[in-house]
Length: 255
Image (tube, rainbow, N blue to C red; front, side, top):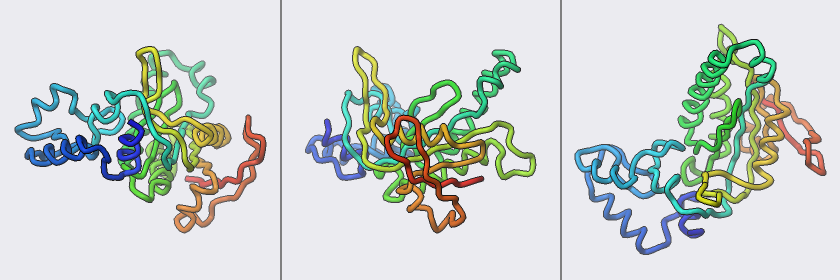
């Protein structure tokens, strides 16, 4: 399974003979839309039977099928990744001034804006926890420029909640992004599993997000190196993040 996950997440050709044969056979089935990993048809006259056995668009990213993500067995691989966290600033205080129905409607609007921006830049949606969303960018889906996709997705997300527009933001959101090598895959136990990334990269991205003000993207130095020419005015910072022994060299991008 580790070799399979490496093939999917790194964008390498599947190493197992059965998977190579399966991709080839699926490619022979006429389809208007198919899974980017296994070639299973999503749309077309022959897609119906495939959908009955789980070859349907994933909720994590609709260009991938559920069999390749949600329904895949537990396991994963150590791969290059950019992890993004976006969080609503002052959510607790905001919720105190609104009814639960109003708060839920606001969060749903935030989720729609976030998922639209993230998926448009080839993200795999991670966990959604209250007022926070997580996204994972890997070479197998976003290509070799996956860190740039992560920053562009963050910018699109902030514009989606109104930053940089004449009307102004309708919700205060901050974003953190970190890039490196980390374990990515279906993690869980006891009958529960979820697709996520685990390790220091994820922890650092979450801490960067916690330090970002509304309308800001805080990135690690590795992430910023991929977009330095696009955001030359980013502010360099040396942050002492919670739980980190050493200060983290980072950059602040304002939208």
